[in-house]
Image (cartoon, rainbow, N blue to C red):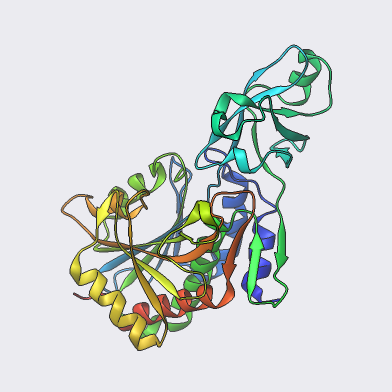
Length: 337
């Protein structure tokens, strides 16, 4: 198994539902400390790493650490926990799955209705195997975060990875590799690099907004994933196995032509396939950063992921490696447009 795949599996040991990311941030700090000139943590819990301070124009990369999940909103007299989704959590696809709460208690996600078309957030509950509200509140208090028990396996022909939380773990692992890459090649680089492991992306890109103002970058790349066609319910122009995704625009940003041209050149120089995409229904962190202060060159580069924001997601191994190579080439080339 490739090292980066093992890192994804390791990251899934640390629950990080939006607003409850401290455990995974502590782990990530340990991983990056040997490679960074400076590490900061702000009031939002963002982990901010700087390399090559003062070398040249500042480039900010971001990978968000928070996952979608659940929050206990009410405890019924019979001990069942009513929950609502936090972030982009498609609960209708997760009925029957095991929920693990932040204090280690587990339960089964179920619903009171059998009609998928009418499912709403208030229709879902978690059964932790107790019979009274008092007992349930002792085990899982109101306001406790929960997430699905992680899955992880490699496809039959070993070219696809299926796992929980790929939507955000992929960006984290890519960014960890870029931090090491920058440290190893720092003497050749033309830019100062800041890498943020941002919080609360799932609930409105809240973490990255604070970082953008404080760091004041000239350039910004959001490292993310993009929904790829995987079923009739998930049809999109993006395809698994067709390379890196360069998002030209989404609901929050229209990336500047100079940035898109630079990413195209980087992909061609790296010899990797890429897919341009307009995300008309979603938004990345790029829009929040682009309008910071006097404006920032901003874009999102992503890995295609099938069954995105369901209990288990899928990626093609070669797509991950192509995104990694594209971003490494961009870093070596230098952001100077």
